[in-house]
Image 1 (cartoon, rainbow, N blue to C red):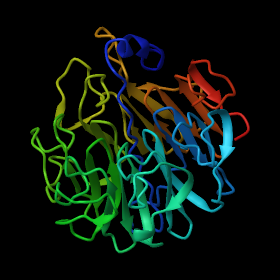
Image 2 (image 1 turned 135 degrees about the vertical axis):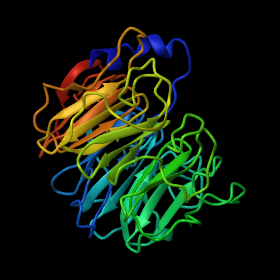
Image 3 (image 1 turned 90 degrees about the vertical axis):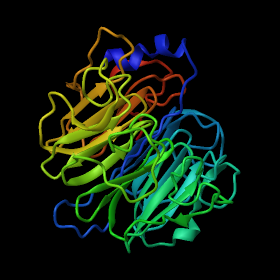
Image 4 (image 1 turned 60 degrees about the vertical axis):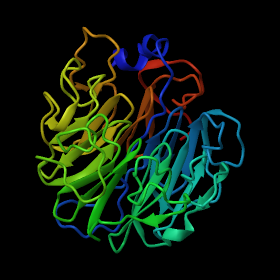
Length: 382
């Protein structure tokens, strides 16, 4: 994995860094018989990471310019600090510079950057302390946070979104006057899973079908073309799906059989096929990746998956035209329960430990240093 975590300097020199979106799915109290609840407890943002420990406390580390560590300050930390005021978290979702968490009571709280209203309080002022998303109440079963917008699934299976709507990603008219949470129009109330990317949103329905809407410039809606859409159309050719993850401009789903299929941008091989191939306008199976996968995490230019047995496999992130970057098992990791991919780093969560690797300029690896590492490092003091 050295190619995608350390060779990024070559790519950055040629252009501006794009903020990552991590569309990890968070689900609680799910009654669907085909898959037990997916409670993702780790989230890697642009240059920070947050994770939920076994006590329900959220610990964050890395960049804190917008208060994305949630401890009431804007001071960066290369070691974990506790998010203030949350002791019953069960799942978490991260983005470029903000994070949202779900508690055991179904309440959603967000903190960090808020320039597009992604914290859900109706304003645009950043917050270094968690803010409840009051409009969606305490009946939330899933939440996903992107760079500039966030969405949640309520216990009645309705979908609510807040934040930026420049591409129609909130599922309301693009001329919607404010950033406050609103219900998605044109979608049946049977969503079971949700993932938000950079300007687009995807949900898994009770039937196992997947619907995506918003920006589609790279085929990230999986509809066979690059035209934007409103909610309602289904991803083409995707088998029944249990969970979904949205990256910056691509998305991936875990099928009921445990396979992984991805679609959208493939400039770094993040879809799981040879990087030189065109963007995938419809879902494609990750080359060389078998079944038995439990969770998939799509990041900015790379993707990782965790099997039921706890093995972590990653692919993409290449900056070298001669490197295919096929799926590679991360041998150095202990059995892992969750995985998250940031801009140029990734983190995995075991039963009681967190491990990170990649870029570390802001301390986002949590090992107490600012040194990059191409092999997983255990987060200190988690």
